[in-house]
Length: 106
Length: 308
Image (cartoon, rainbow over all chains, first blue to last red; front, side, top):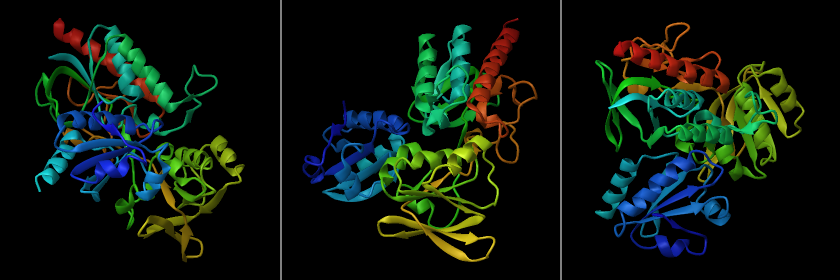
């Protein structure tokens, strides 16, 4: 699997440095089932360049309330621990990849 | 090159796929941003024949997909960026997957939820504005919610959301609901639902954390009022997904594909349309599935006529 599963305990460590994409999803959400495979693929393709991660919104209530998630899928893009982009709904791979690479090279 | 490509994976597209696979047409199905279609954002489907105890939308669509797979249907995930229907074979450009060429095409891209188009709405999608109760209801446990709309889907969402919310207010711009009697009775009997009929949404009210309410115009008093809520679920209908066709296929003024009455034929021979993308009137899972089988049979007949 290409995306790292994050929990409240492991979250900070993973987003602290570099570029991180986090996909908030849940098993009962239809559109999330489209987004997740795309994110998993990005995890493979961007290995070593950025951290690609997922959070199960059904279980990680502290994280969803911390980031004010009220809709899924929601994708958060972090640079050195700071949220720089929030994307709600299903996003295409090329769009995500471009945003991530731009941030990596900035 | 494919004999048949189907764009869209709601009940129409998947039924067409099952029929075409069984007819040995080896269809390719292109699955877009909402696989399974609108049914995957609903809860219980109680009027699809053959399921006496009801079935969830996700389960029903999962079953249809499984059935298509069983007959060897090929699936790819991708957004169709544009199509060239000026001659056959037809050419489809699929985001990230390149070019797909096919002798026949079935369009079953369905329809997507409409928004209200009021200030502060678009900016707050994901911050309290939603069109998917089954996706997002979970985030409003013990909170107050507004559902906007007066049809069956609005009332179904309102009912569903009372599982999570402390209170659901139904806002509708007219005095009368369009929903069926059974849905109305069910909602009226639900003590957690309160009613703000004859109220037109004016503006979404927010603070830095997201949505805090909805400003409405009370049409009987002419006064504006703010209804407090952390979530506003918009259920005011759908618009057909026909933008990618760039006018090559004739549609009505609302974008619904025009088909020759009694068939699924469009203005271009070899291109067929089924499901909600060509149906603004019935919009049922069963009518979509029915028209999907028609599109498959029409495609098959079309291929036969070419081979003769």
